[in-house]
Amino acid sequence: MLFLRGRRVFFTDGRYTEQARDEVGGARVVIAKGQLLEAAGKLIGEAKAAAIGFESDHTSVATAAEMRKLAGKKISWKPTSGLIMGQRMN
Image (cartoon, rainbow, N blue to C red):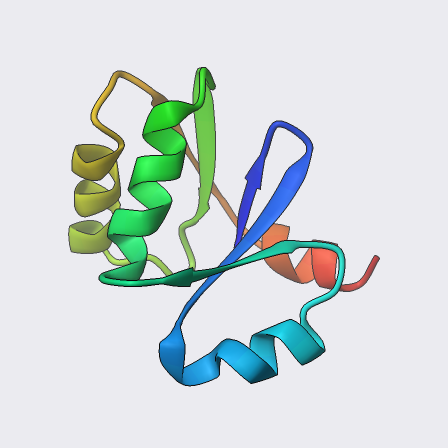
């Protein structure tokens, strides 16, 4: 799930197309054709955001490094905790 400029974007792969469309509410569903991180990184790279938060409780150091690389520009990365769960409760 990516929160970007007031929008919510849920990324998944083709295995979960129907389930995501049925169960994900309040977010645009993106069915990635390749790697999920690549799809998210491309969208982040297109944004003019200065800071991106990520769930540090569930993100490995390697995954965080890959996200930084894929975004392709200087963005301040902010580790968060419980952000997604908090949004699910709304």
